[in-house]
Image (cartoon, rainbow, N blue to C red; front, side, top):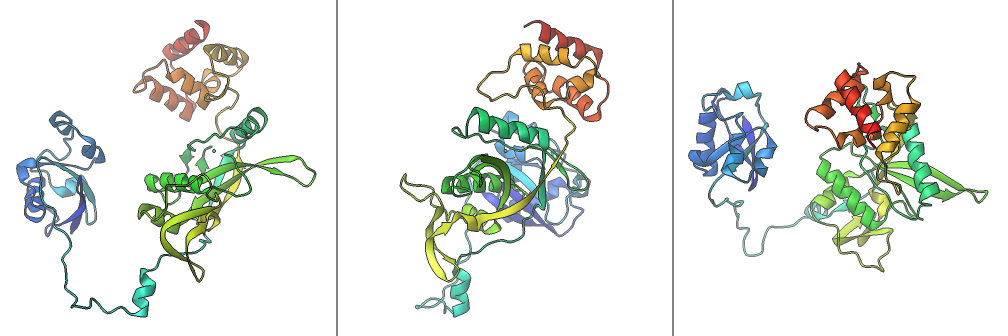
Length: 365
């Protein structure tokens, strides 16, 4: 079988003939195939190993520290990826060079076409639809429309849960006569590429003038096309965008083929794949003031919220994402916050100690 080894040098492959080998035997294979001495190797299934800075940091990764542990006990199989940290330097062998004669390799028309980067519209998204919590969405639309009058940009990450049916419990902004500018295409492509998720969705809030001259505010959702993400990862996009550049066009460092024409400028719409939008009623309340707004949220808001909701159970009273964000400033993020989040998720009773603590926070300000 083949195991993929990710190190500071990139991704390499190690061939393992016997799937029942141990960690010690795997290290010997790495030494013979990748020229890294066994005593310099630290292996782990945890990618955070590559972020280790000191020897003490490396010692925290113990899942593969026992040399007699078989790979089968680590649920490793053909194609699995491991992470490798090592000390010292080595020379990484480059690809073999095959001389092609004094005139180079013969190029056919098929070869020339294969070397071209073709940009076309992608009809089908990887994410079938995105559904917004209607109360959260309405609160966001109202804020950017009435408070900011779309004069200030606001962006954020959508968060949520994915059900077994693929439904996502979640909630993002602002435009002109084009859907996304070239800078926004770059940002969306970067976030999409970094996520590693083919289902990554970018959502916008748009303000448009209707037939009566009034303002219509609505959401739109897109995915960046597979070609767009490939172009970004391979460094085709021109990131130095001048102030006079047309925002509707993305500039490439080399010619691409759009339709039948070679060009370095691509209409941004070619990179957008429309995603359907639904709405739903989420499980959390949306009455608590939202952070990251012009008016700062104070603990007095917590007191007012608790006073207004005395008629419901305590877990219902704190079942608000933005309330939990405020309370989290004063609690242990590793113990208290997960415990409260578990109560909210399961709608189980909140321990009396946490109730007293939250009520005392509200009354102390």
